[in-house]
Image (cartoon, rainbow, N blue to C red; front, side):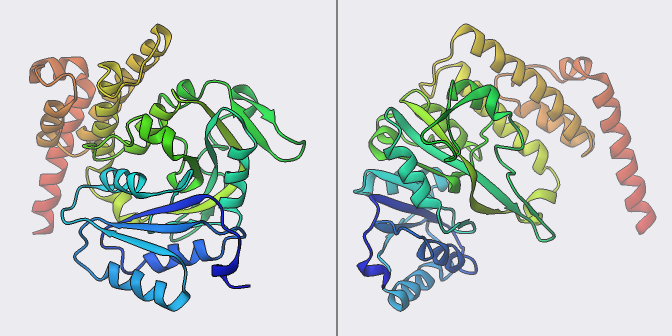
Amino acid sequence: MSSSKQARLDVTVVMPSFNRSALIVRALDSVRRQSAMPHEILVVDDASTDDTVAQVEAWRDRTGFPVRIERLAKNGGVAAARNRAMELANTRYISFLDSDDEHLPDTLARLVSALEESPGAVVAFGDATKVTPSKRIPHAMFGAKLDIASIADPVGEPGQGRYRLRDAKSTFLKASLIATCSACFIRQEALAAGGMPVGYKMGSDWLFWLRLAQRGDFVFVNEDVSLVHRHPDNLTRPGAAADTSIAKLAGYTSILDGALGISVDPAQRRLVEGFVDERVALLRYQSSLLGFDSYRRYAKLIPGRPQQSLVSHLLADPRSAVRSVYCSFKRKRGSHTSD
C-alpha cells in the first residue's frame, strides 16, 4: 500500500533545517519508513544558502509523501524555526526531527499511542542511539544516565515498557536528557507554554521541556526510537566545551530569575544554584586549558556575574588561573618550536 493511502496519525513531523542539503534526504527517508505515517512533514528552512529546499522538493515529487515547506526570509535559529512550525501545524501532536537525525520505524506509532493512552500526559519520549563515525551507543540519552525505577512508575500494560515520571521538572532541572527527535508532545500545550525559548545558542530544547513539565506529565517509552548523529567537528572545536558551559549557565540564570516562566520551589532553587556553582567551576577549568587570554574572556561572559573583577575570578580558583598561564606558555612554546 502506498504511503498516500495509509491511515495517518494525528501528528506532524517538524523538521527545521539550515544548509542540510547533504543530509536531509536521509531524515526524510526515515519518516517514510514509519510503520504508522504522520499527517505530514513540515520542513522549516531557516534561510539556507545551499539547495536544501530543492532537495526536499525533489524528494517530495519523487515519493509523493505529504511535505509542506516553510521558507524563512531571515535566519533566526532552530528554536524560532520550530516555533514557526508549531504555529503552522494543524495536528494534535508534534514530533521533532532534526534534519541530520533519523526516526526509527516505530517511533511515531509508539510515541503517539503512549500519549493517547496516558491521560494527563503532555509529552511522550523514548531513548536514542548515538551514532558517531566510529560506533553506535544504544540507550545513550536517558536510560544510561538515570535509574528509571527511582524516578518513574510503570504505566500501561505489563511488558509495554512505559513509565510516568514522578517529577519531570526536577528530573530535567540540571540538563535535558531527551533527544528532540525522540519525543512527541501535544501542540496546544506547547503553544500555551510559550513555545521554545529563543535567543539561546544551545539548550532551548531543555528549557522547552521544563516549560512543558508545568503543563502535565511526561511518559517514557523504554526503548530507542531515534538515531542521533554526532559530528566530530562540533565536538572537537577549540572552545566548544566552554561555550556549552556558558550556554548552560545562561539557562540556569533564566530559570532562577523567572525570565522564562519556569517556576521553582525552594528545594529546586537550591538545586539550580548548586548546578551553577558546579558549572562555573567546570567553565574555569575548560577555559584555562585554552590559555590565559581565553580564561579572562570567558570570566567576563559568565551569566549573572559579569561585574566581578578579574581578581575575584583569579582568587576564586587559583589553580585554574595558574593552569591558564601555563597553557598559554605551552602554546607559545609549541608555536615557536614549529616555526
